[in-house]
Length: 372
Image (cartoon, rainbow, N blue to C red; front, side, top):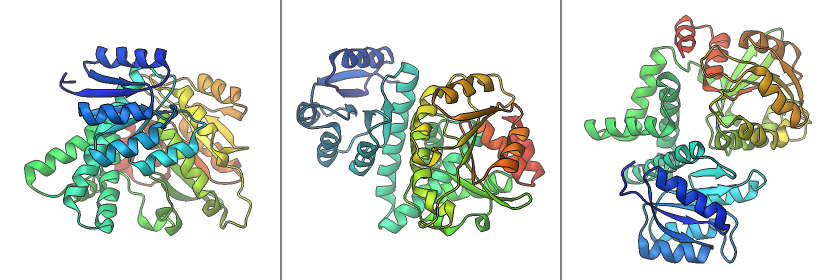
């Protein structure tokens, strides 16, 4: 990371603030200022003009969300918010304020750097959309296409979200075409290659209109009766928190209406050993929609896979009923045969690709998914 990238840190706990500064400086960021509360953060942002701000949500005087709102009103910059899973309402407020990425304490350098990259990438994306679109409707349509294209690139090429957006933006700059046009071209190209052939007819209108920002996919499966399978990679705590909120928002739709009691969900999960799997489990376990859910832990054939037994231990500690079924195909068969309600597949893009290939009759898709 070029050392010209300056960062403002706002954290009222001295030990965490010093640790955060050390991690940033080790990664060649320049910490240009440190604040102990929201008012000081706003003042320093005004005078120091940082390239990025890292703000704790809960600070005395003025909290991180209001500080972010004031900073962004004066000079938009990427902001990474430090938060906790119990702060669901604060996370919603932060999103409304314009914060694009979150990091849960305690964190490691391996968590911090991807979170910063995500904040910068999403900020750049939002700025690019503002420049290219004239109306809110245009912006929403462009964002939908860009999100889908990023997801396909991440799955097909193994890219991070930041790298996927960088590739789209670079193509836009080289070609002179808007980001939306580039995204639509990527979607068309990858769909023709057999990626993400879910089909619009398999997606109910209620899901498309729901208020959540994730990339949740719905596939309706007919195996002795209709069954809904929802897929979301959710391989890091931030993505898992988004999925948890999405499931909470979508439960009335899954039940067939707000006046009906939704049946328990079944979660099929696999994970990679180099991810913060404990953080993912905590985030998903906080979802009201997963209360009473059964968890089936599995594992794909990959070098960095977390053993299904280790994953099961995390869910058992969280108080959930857990089964361990190692082959993903067997885990899916068990879920579809015994689940009283919808099945959710999450925790790994590798697992999502493998399960999607099993559900969609597309030989080319099976080949592609099996390679990653």
